[in-house]
Image (tube, protein in one colour):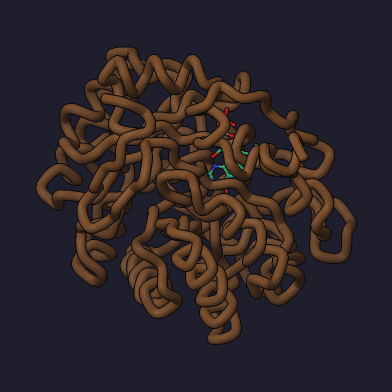
Length: 361
Ligand SMILES: Cc1cc2nc3c(=O)[nH]c(=O)nc-3n(C[C@H](O)[C@H](O)[C@H](O)COP(=O)(O)O)c2cc1C
């Protein structure tokens, strides 16, 4: 399979197999409304096979960061509509990452009365509040069993809002230590009900959310991101047998849905665990190599052309190179990412990376 060949993932049409990975950039202001900066940033990157947006909050209680966009208010839906229109006009495909941050938050960010999680265990560490001060992350409210079902509905409403905003689909955020991942891991989930304890029970919330979203907007427009063994934000998956059992239960639960794609972040995309997940879930598969070093053209080519995945998720190289697919295909020189601007409020380091044509004048 060639990296530059088109693909169909369910109802999603990819112009090539380089997917823009979800990248939180915090440019959406206090109200979380996508603005001109986001319109420009995403439209510049429409030449990637598919864009997955930054993690986007569903209701205020699910917000993790000041400056993070939401898909809750009408103004947010209208803001995203301008982003999706611009990406479509430039020939791209775009899905929104639906993110519930769970306990990785603070009432000084959400403006809500509480922060929620599977169990009343803090993530550990501190976070920046909306007023710029730092505070320890709180001990969250453990969702009651009924409240877990209500949280499933929060994802469903956000998915409907995504379709209203013109997105081609959604990616359920099940990775990186946020709410769904908190349910999956035994260190953050010590519940005694049907959502805790065994691997089957810990994977139940992820399956219910994804099934309900798929029922609402179509499985052919629904994907999920997972990051087994990521060990971040206090969500630890260090027992290999438990990880295997949990992600087997999860992918067996997802397989009958016929999802558009599954997107897995792991440092060994060609390893047994990731390939087991891929085989078990049976959906079009996006691999991402994780944070250790930015994914290179050589790695991407080896993974897709070696048949280890149907597409590759690329983060930092797409931040720095709006026309990355074109540059890689022509083995052209690359812009270097400027990490000091990964998070920020302005267009600096966000919409000012030149294309190859601009570099060469
Ligand atoms: C600035 C930054 C923000 C990120 N935000 C998200 C996010 O919102 N959701 C997510 O699932 N992953 C997020 N990630 C992880 C990326 O999607 C990707 O997995 C990671 O950058 C590794 O890929 P790369 O080596 O190609 O950069 C983020 C990474 C970076 C560097």
